[in-house]
Structure formats: C-alpha cells, structure tokens
Image (cartoon, rainbow, N blue to C red; front, side, top):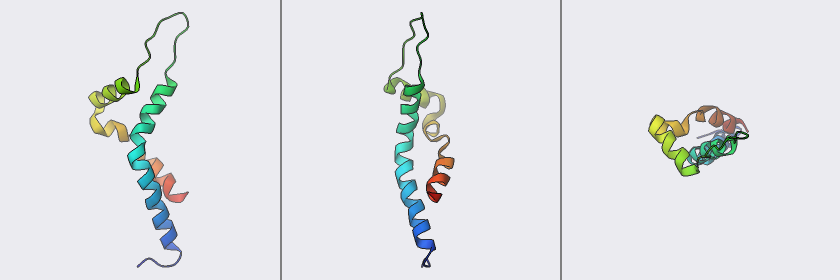
Length: 79
C-alpha cells in the first residue's frame, strides 16, 4: 500500500497522464493548424485538421501523434 505522502503524488501523476495521453494527438494537430501562416502576396493553401492528420499518419504512423509526449508526462507528474 502507498504510504501517507506518496499516495497523492502517485495518484496525481496518474491523473495527469490520464488527461494527456488521449488528448495529446489532438493538441499536436491543433498546434500545427495554429502555426500555419500565409505568405504575403502569395496564395498558399492552408491545410485542414483532417489533411494534417493524414499527412502526419503517412509520414510517421501512429507514433507521429505521440512524439514529445514524455516531457508532458513528466511535467504532469510533478504539477
């Protein structure tokens, strides 16, 4: 059994992980959508969320959606 002070740390970390693991792929796609820019004087087609998702999957499979997750999980464990 977990002793007094360890239980909140362990369960807090698990709660943070439970939040980040399913939402991280959505957050990655959202961030890519947000950082797309239009060049002045040039027509550049901005990609939709669906197009970005397909492009990411083709380039790296399911793992592409979880790239960089480890630091988020570490931060979630200590918050």
